[in-house]
Length: 311
Image (cartoon, rainbow, N blue to C red):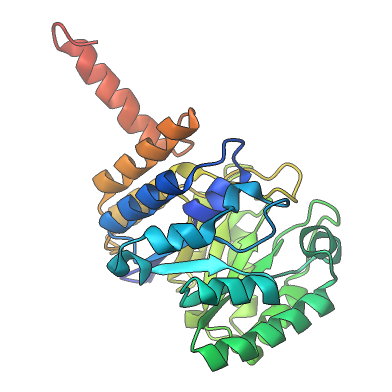
């Protein structure tokens, strides 16, 4: 078995993670979280999105978040901008990498973007042209690649066709998203293998939610194909406001722990990453969802109990 020697992780917690939390984090908290993730060694961090505040209030003031970041941290940042207004605002805020959206499910596309797949690709084409003019790196997301909450099973062939369109219009990277977390390892691996027949593997990324506890296994299955870019979320935060039943993304801490154990380099300091997860979970008033963070908390609690006078 051959797996990549190094994997690049795209941290989506500050956007895909926080957008589905009941408690909206203020600018200062979001900035500190991003800075802690950068200090942990994450080179790609999705900082927020430029969408109407009434739709996703948790992502309000993303421009202020970017403005407050230190320049060396801002250089690692991407943002989501699903339409021309969002793209214009993102560029004005200084974003150098922008993510755009489409879906492999017609029903989900209508509910998430208020348009069909074909129209979402037309929007993407217009944004790609604007990105080239502004020298903006473009990342494409395809949602519901392994299943849809409204339509059920999604054919890999359809996903490949959409990925080809995104590749043709100029996306530097295409993230294949199991938005509702229904995928299993062989299905995830088969999907990547199918899409990679038409789109170069180095242009693809995996994005797995852990609704059924399959995300980490799916990451490893795709790692076996040679896929070397994965989206993940600190403390396993997240979900999708427009996908009933979708829970958090695969935990960044769990992915790093697994890759460390496999001898795969990520450049991420696990202890600092755990501190970042602890910081945001304390603000949100909830425990982390990743197993590594829970194990560390249990171990530290047991150690304190063994020391006289400690509680």
